[in-house]
Image 1 (spheres, rainbow, N blue to C red):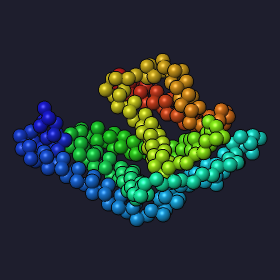
Image 2 (image 1 turned 60 degrees about the vertical axis):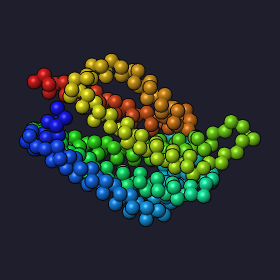
Image 3 (image 1 turned 45 degrees about the horizontal axis):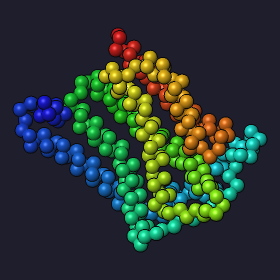
Length: 275
């Protein structure tokens, strides 16, 4: 079965040798790794831009998200959206710490930049096993997957991340406790939150595939719509710096819209299957 699947993916005859199949897989892996390492090396040499402009910017009270929130607060006559005091310094505790995190961020940046090419290579890898109609639709799906992933990154970086950093950096158990935030702790937060939202934004694509193979339906999603909204609201309340309705809505609405879009996608798949 495995040999047959590989032969289909490779567009070869079923009697093709194991080494012919392995060559196709090897070419896909090598191209992906080359793109990843080349872009990681490029990211390594753009250290100043990546760290000073992207990584460290969300801890500055002049970050664009904080300024826009303050403007929004002035429009709705509330001062709770303005960042008044937000300043902390990062510390490094190990001699190789800064270099190690430089490498980590370079690799992560390389993966994010190479992701479109890797996904395109993967699509080319499986394309010979698809019918003409499947190739037409799968090309659009690959495009949507990319768009959703990068929209998730942007949403995570400009919305969830700054709100989370502000809340966590200013959270206080006692006035006798002073925060000494390590570079590792900060960068882990910077890396995890946008990447996680990038994956969460793939929910419509995931629902598409699950509905396509019959594992989930629009009726099921509608049935648990209220439960899902409560879960989304709880998640939004945890990661926002206050219980202010406007701040809470900034996180809740986009996440819930993803759920509603997923319902529509599942419904369209069911309708198409019935035709």
